[in-house]
Amino acid sequence: MDPSTRAAALTDRRLDSRNWTLEALIAEALANSPELAVAKARHETALAAVVTAGERPNPTVAVAPQIVTPDLNWVNGTYGVVFDWTFETAGKRSRRVEAAREQARATASQVIDTHWKVRATLRRAYLDLWVAQRRETLLNATATKQSEVVTALDQRRKAGEASPLDLAQPRLLAAQLRLQASDATKTVALARASLAAALSMGVSGVSGAEFSFAEFEKEPGKSSCHREQALLRRSDVLVALADYATAEAILKLEIARQYPDFHLNPGYEFDAGNNKWAIGFGLTLPVLNQNQGAIGEAEAKRKELAAAFDAVQTRVLNECDRAAAGVEAARKKLSTLQALLKEQTSQMESMKQLAEAGEEDRLALISSEVEQASISVANLDALAELQAALGEMEAATQTPRSP
Image 1 (cartoon, rainbow, N blue to C red):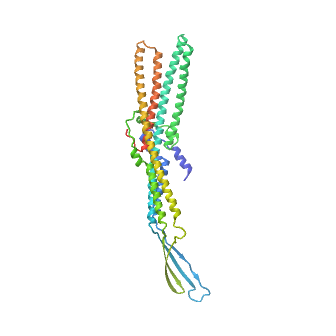
Image 2 (image 1 turned 180 degrees about the vertical axis):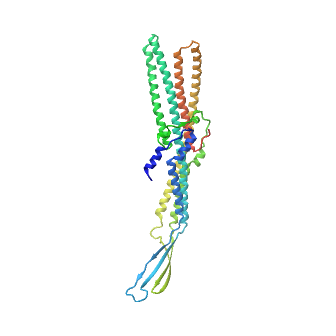
Image 3 (image 1 turned 60 degrees about the horizontal axis):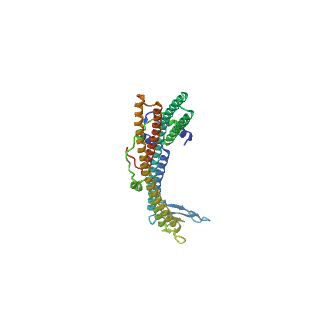
């Protein structure tokens, strides 16, 4: 493995110039995720361990020639060979295979869990980029409108129709909006870096790409939290369940190890021209211990993993409930702001008509446009909160959300 080659491949990766959607980016992230590659490699290792667990012990052979001195016979020694065949008892091999298979099942569930984590990370980074870009646009527009308010008030001051104090608050608001717009520009850059990290590439890899945020721009429909399904089928629940099953299989293996393996020892010896055949039997005597220590340790580990399984299910339940509550609260907030934005838009349209007829002050119209822009920013934030909450619900249930 050449680190420089790997580094060059990482830095050279970039998105092509086509219009990227959320699902296309998710597929790209999954195809190139190093975390997912590690999880898959661990699963392959666990599958190989199943083969290892099922292997039977090889026999051993020992050769111990003996030389007789002085040399009185035509064959001056004894030459023999002894074999040792081990036969495992009490189903030890099947217990090993069972434990290895359960561990492989756990690593398979970890692959699925990593898949969902990569998906959630990418979706969150993509959402942050959309919000940052929209905020930058809205704040720049709001700052421009507020600058027009300051200009109009300054003209009134010069005409003697307003005092310098009337300019203080609008100027302060204009400065604050410019600062917020500047922060939004920085946030866009950080969001691009986060998206690049989620795609496992450098930030230059996303610089020339075009993105479609259609999924975020529309108000999402109703979504249900599949809590019961998550409690039974979520990948980390399956990992915890497989870990417990592994501990159960290991406990059975340690119990089986109380019983000694059987050894068969056939042998042959050529002794001064005589052929001697022998067969021996052997086993380990469970006199000093009956594997109580290993059995007790395996029992304690099984209890630990049973408690860990309960903890995982409790965490999943809390995450689902919190995600559902977050979605409901975000929907209510968005509904309130949309009603406020609709009312403000209607009021501004009326003011435009009056201004065109010469019955309304232009300064009041510009101020109304500033208020509408500010409400639009708040509405964007509420929509972003709802989309983030829906992403958390999707991650909590590990169920793709319907469009």
